[in-house]
Length: 168
Image (cartoon, rainbow, N blue to C red; front, side, top):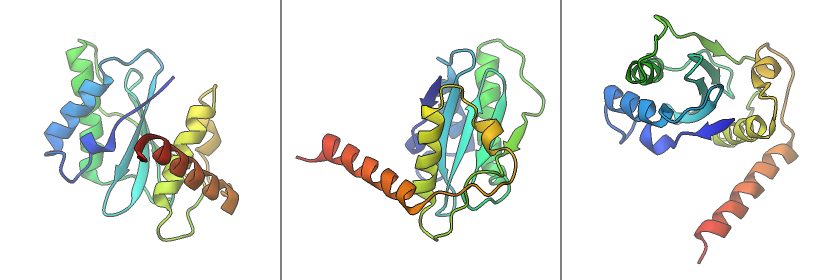
């Protein structure tokens, strides 16, 4: 089961300080079902990455289409504290250190401006995978790549969604 976290509530610009953003995350996690994953698209310094969180299991997966290491210390703190606040409120024991797994096998972004499209594609693949096997699929470095048609498909899906919901 997969849920989405609005990047407008957790972003580094306009969403408050780290503590406020952690609280927003913990509130979003409150209705989590066992085994549920939350997709957190996050923009840091004009670059989109995807963080996937299982708050019950206290596990975090990091997906960067440029295959950089884990995000900024501030982002790690926001997510870790969001999980800890959620666990505290639910009166459950939280881990001292929450493990972050870098998904080094995600397809590599070659262009300078396609990171958002790659993150949307990652989210689509996770949502369509009934087994939620993304961690095994993308854990190790590999030669996975998106074709031009894969990226065009995401652009088309986005355009259709936008026209359906926002065109007058």
